[in-house]
Image 1 (cartoon, rainbow, N blue to C red):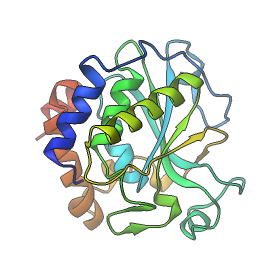
Image 2 (cartoon, rainbow, N blue to C red):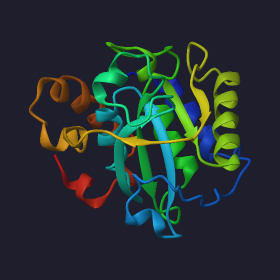
Image 3 (tube, rainbow, N blue to C red):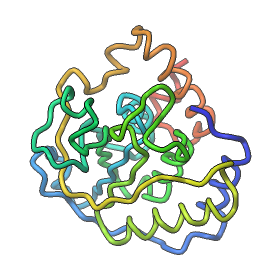
Length: 225
């Protein structure tokens, strides 16, 4: 995960130092069949983000305080019930993404956006590191008008403030469907931490994330060394 120190400062300022135009994000529970019982609780809300490989996205967001559950899956495509192999061809239109079920009384959508912007490169088109293809695009699948407006607002503000060296290419796409990935993709880092991709790609991202967001981690994540 490579984001410049200046980008970190700009993002934090934009999100938390007076430029925020919205104070709350309305609950909008999804009717998608992949949602578990937590989604029926009116005190929860849902965000859906694509930041490249969903193994990385999941490992990061599930450590954030206020996040109840993170599900790896596919969204934004035209093929129903796609398999990992189908999505990997880059022809289904889906993006690898994560559905983040969270408690808005503990973590806001604005804060989730801050994590989103800071933990991947939003300036590379259809690519994150060595992962290349439309399935790895930087994307916010918005569930409501409020989420769309916030995401677009921050994207424009970050660009105008020069937070990144290149223009942000993140797309804002309406949430239409979400298909949970195969079981072996869920909690991938937790169960496969010794695997080379986890050690060389995910672990360094988590290390940076936990240092930047150390005051907003779940208590179990804070104590892990």
